[in-house]
Image (cartoon, rainbow, N blue to C red; front, side, top):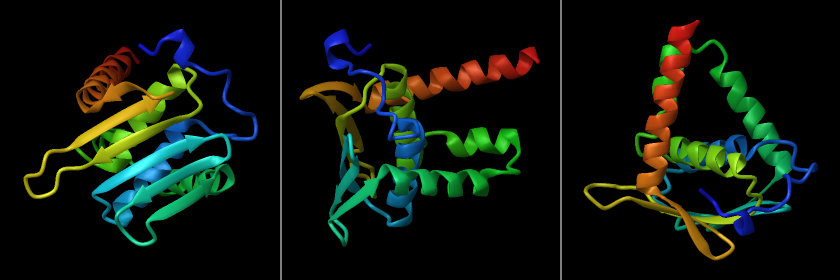
Length: 161
């Protein structure tokens, strides 16, 4: 749980989309570029991504991220529910991990932060940490546990209907 002093006020109205959608979009871009390491800064004006690939620094305005999120939604339309759950699983992908990080940050009212990550490639260790106001609030095991919990809740909700 993120402490009260780590939270900020409600997300800026100008942002217009959740961190879950914004970070999922960034994760999609990182997957397409085959990025192994990244530092992702969430700021009031958008998201900055620093990687070891060219160009090393990318800036995404909230408007850019809204357009990318809308394109992703359009691509996902028509995907069967069971397939969507499998594809959304973190499984070590930027898209999956950042989607979960965004959902957790949204649920805690966090508006800014820094994500440090390296995904496993050929036997390397993967790591992902999230810092808010200089303090670590999430790491890879916590993110993976949250994903397992969310998946189990989705399963229970589907069985009720």
